[in-house]
Image 1 (cartoon, rainbow, N blue to C red):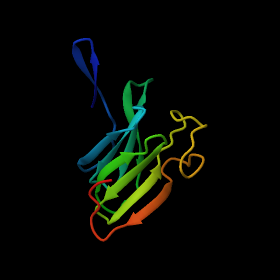
Image 2 (image 1 turned 90 degrees about the vertical axis):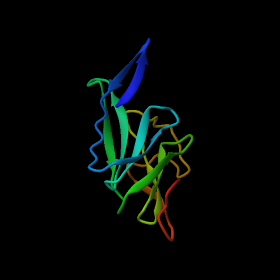
Image 3 (image 1 turned 180 degrees about the vertical axis):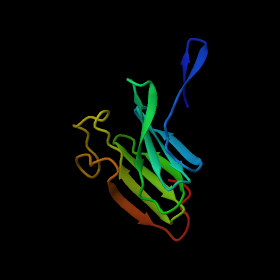
Length: 130
C-alpha cells in the first residue's frame, strides 16, 4: 500500500506489484511521482499512480538473474540503478510516457524506452547496495 494522510486520518491506496517473492528495497523517484521496488523475483516493478482507477500500477524491468537487493534513482533523470546478487549493478531507463517530460535529458542523451539497459557493471560477488 501507499499511505496518504487526509486530515488526521491515514488512507491506504492499493499497489499492484506483480512480484512472486519478497520486496527487498523500495525508493521513491526524486519527483515523488513513481517508485521502484527491488525484489526476490528477479525483477524491478516501477510503480506510478493511475488516477482513473485510484491505485498504483507497475511496469516491470526483468533483466536480472537473481534477487535485486537495492534500487536507487538518478537525481534529475528517469533512470534507476539496481544492485543484484547476480554480481551486477545495472542502470535502466525508467521513462514513463504518461509521467515524464519529453524534454527530459539523461547522461545518455534523450530518454530511452522504459526498461532499456543503459549500463552494466560486473562485480566479483553480490552487489548489496547502489
